[in-house]
Length: 375
Ligand code: GMT
Image (cartoon, helix red, strand yellow):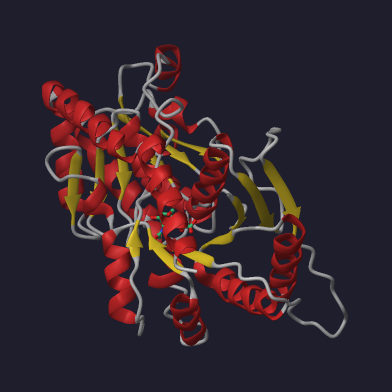
């Protein structure tokens, strides 16, 4: 197949999933054309089946807001025509689905039918999509898509409950490269971080408000009162300076390290004991899946699709959003019981294997075929 992929080419979960999907499809001999405003972060090598087309948004003094959506739709039309694309697959509804709708209609006018599939990732529905300024366009472009997928059952149900959506939504969960994300021997690394044999907690995110970084720090603070421990924070974003201030106020700076946007996350996860994800919203929780694949149990909130991924009492523990007391209790339970921790480690990896790239990518291929057969 010849597939056009549109996504946010950043380090965010939806961009990572879209890029990894494109790479996996290219390995399976499909021609994949990325249409994005900058080169996707993980697309940094040559493959004969992978193509990258930049969306340029010409500016003009009249534009207070340069019309990205129009530039994107025009680029989709151009690439679909030139490379005879079979379909477009857009990740994150806003504004990709409405741009794809526009592109499809323009192509139709030229006598070419190129269906588009929209994959919903989370905040495009649960947060931004519900904004009255966006909601009617989001609902319309979901209804107009030739296929719609959601990354968890919860996200599908929330979409159906909130929007007047009159079409089926297929659940295709996120996936992981189990060759890359596996527990590696990095004991020297652990010794450097935890020289006195301290326990190690890890959190990865984009440090936005929905991630509740304060809860991460609060849980760590309470755990550290009971058990010597260190905390590694991976990622960056708007709440970081506030989080740093919290650490200074609690006088725990010596035990907390902010690692920034680290690429080799799997190396840090390989030496971690518990992964914390207290998010207020989380349609899937890709960062938690990465931890589980590296045999790290997850102590998380019960937001969104998290309970589908993190099995309570098996791969980790799930608590109500904001219940830092329960999260502290569960973390301590794992840290204090080596046998329990080891059992959870094995279960976390076993459950992560359900989300292997080898299992999930063919589901997208089957879905593409189904959509194409309908036209
Ligand atoms: O979590 C974010 O803020 C980033 C966001 C994105 O679109 O990049 O992540 C969403 O998509 C990921 C990939 O499908 C999911 O794993 C995340 O759970 C989801 N985030 C939220 O729902 C808050």
